Image (cartoon, rainbow, N blue to C red; front, side, top):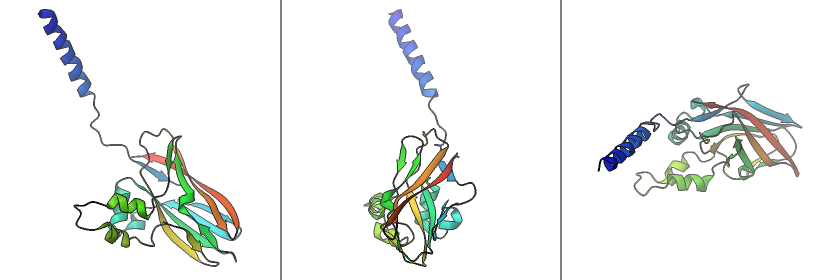
Length: 192
């Protein structure tokens, strides 16, 4: 009987010790930084500028502010077409890579609609998404000769378990007329 009691006391002691080791701290949030403040690609009459969006870039839009405060990665990207050809960017052909396995595609309208769908919500996803229409890259964006566009790319939060301190944003199949180019922008990953 004493052996059984001793056995249960040891099990209880191990259980209590294991419970006290559980983390209770805030989850780690990762954000991107450029050095210098923005990354620039400029070649053959095409200029692309990418930088992590700040509070000032999303001020006045509750949905963008909510994404930014919840650790989502928002990249502000300007495309300036100084050529005589049209430039076509398809966000579905781009990605953000951090670490070995943290691969993210930009969120598009259906992704956001699904995320915002809540039967108990007072506001429909349509109303929230209408407020950001034409402010984020969703589908093919065509920049005509001599024009410029500036919008946001929205990515899910980076994996806090990612070991890398670097990330890269790659635009695959960016069309300048009928020619394609691949552009990659490097970032540093900062933990807060």
